[in-house]
Structure formats: C-alpha cells, structure tokens
Length: 206
Image 1 (cartoon, rainbow, N blue to C red):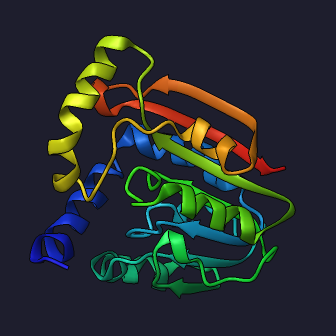
Image 2 (image 1 turned 180 degrees about the vertical axis):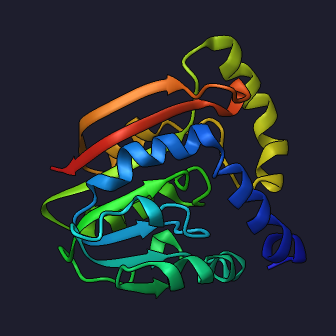
Image 3 (image 1 turned 45 degrees about the vertical axis):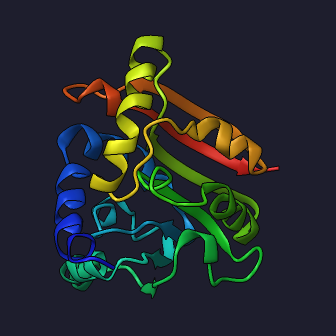
C-alpha cells in the first residue's frame, strides 16, 4: 500500500464522508441495526454514534485499511458496543453462513474492487430474515450528469481510493439476491452533483 493510501487517503475519506448531509443519511439508516451486526467498510468509525446499544448485541467491523483502523481506534475505545475487527476486504468476509442479523453498508460499495463478490458474501452471512441497511452514492439519473460521471470517473478513482461514480447500488443489490424492502433515491444537498446522487434504504435476502 502506498504512502498516499495509508497516510493521506484515510484522512481525506474520513473528512469527506462525515459532511453534514452524509451524516444525516447515516443517522436515518444505521439506528435500525439489530442483533449481530456486520459493518462492511467500517472506516474511521463514523457510524458508531448512530448504533443503538440496546439493539446491537455485537458489531463486526470489517476494514482492510490499516490507516483507517488507526483512525478508528479512539472511537472504538469510547464506544459501549462489543466490537471485533475483521481486517479483510469485503470479498473475503471471515464469518459463517447465516451468522449475522444486520449488514451495514454506507459509502463503501463504490470503492470495493469486486462489488458483486462482496455483496454475495454479505448475502451469505446474513441470516434468513436478516437485513442489509445501506446508504451509497452512485449513478445519477440525469443524462447530462451521468455523462460527466463517466468522464470524471477514470481521474476520480485513483484520488478517491477507487471510488466509482457510475455504479447503481439498487441494481447491484438485486443482482446479488436481495429484495429492496425500502429505498430512497435523491441528490444530497450542497454537494457536487457528479458525486451526490444517493441511494439509501433496506434490502432483505430472497
């Protein structure tokens, strides 16, 4: 891993992904987590304050970046939750089949190299009746903005940790064996539109 990826990118991502409009979306999604929870792309622990300790029995924090895990250390120390680190990528979730009640996926699917494989892993570890809570940015519905997303993406990806601008989280979830129990699609306010179209909601395994 390069110096940029290990020492600069974690701070950039932590700052960008904790802007007020993104924190609002997190606050609308994460509190519904219950039981044994797997958060994929735990990052610097930005979601920790939104978990309800009365509803969460245990949290598995999957984060392959050593830089991000360092940034999260203080937040984990302050948290009342029982937390275990999983320092592997989303494509290699080291948990048993049907072993978690909730998967939390926030502003992470855009950066996973093989997102289809990672979503298949999330589907594998979810119990029957489990839920995947998500809030992700992705492809815009407006042709003009979508054109700019395609133009910008090759330059954007190496700067933003492999972030794809043109993925469609709703389609990806359905193709991975989930049903969208609820979904909201809208532009985040006060954000550059090429990176602001947001998909959030709850998906369940089928």
